[in-house]
Length: 156
Image (cartoon, helix red, strand yellow):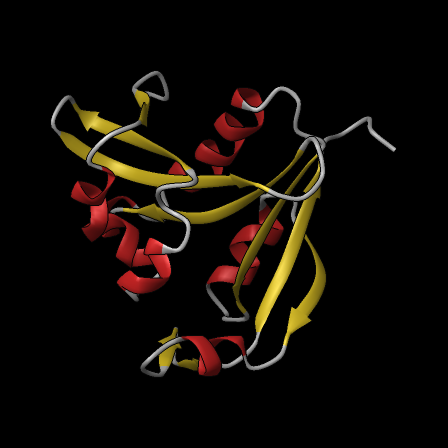
């Protein structure tokens, strides 16, 4: 795993749609944040992406939201996601907090908690109101979005 080949993508971001859809399975929802966000792609080889992440700014300085984090299925469980989050903290040196909104599934929530994120709040009915089909993850029908937050260590 070579963390040195993560690139910020400025143009033709939708060419990475297949990976983005692993974390957010409705293209119209990805369209809401992809162009305004920073798209990072981690390349396993110069032409083969291993993982993607999209970060956006929130309403306060130093506060960011991780809108999408996806690792190619054959590489999942090998540390790419956790390493990508560490990379994002180093890239955004001004970051005080990183937020993530996700479904409350038995696979996603524990991953973020192992990475140091903590539960903040829930938006009831988010997935049933904003997606045009039922979202099922790890056998769980997602209805509510949960928000988790990680604060930079040594900040109060």
